[in-house]
Image (cartoon, rainbow, N blue to C red):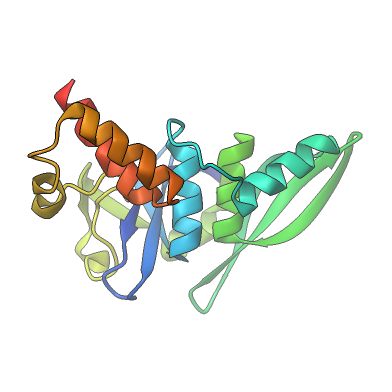
Length: 202
């Protein structure tokens, strides 16, 4: 069974499940995407790892795992989404220590949060993509079969009118202060929106 490498396209709010997010993976050499529903904590953990400029004041769980693995010379070589049963994806971490490889079962959301920290490639099997993958019509448009599940809007950069208007009367200095406070409060979603507003003005 052939493996297909995936890349993270983005994280979107789930329209079908309150408080959940859709992690959208895309095959690197193809047009299919794989949406996976994940929890808010896992979505935040993945988003923070992708947004290198935002540093939590204290290590999150996945950061702690990375520090622990580094201390004991454990690396994650790759993750494989290897099974889909009743809408639930199952994944494995392919780890290595002292040239010995181990396979560890993991939730897909946790596996991908770790993959982003270890710069490990993400794979799935062709038959899983055939079963659950969808085709993008365009870069920013999802096939109508999944329009009720996700909206293509990056978790760390929501382009809503409300979020834009909230910063209109703020100076760059005020925005920087707001971003520092948001990071200190561990409100990383707000910090990312403020950072994007600052970048748009510069």
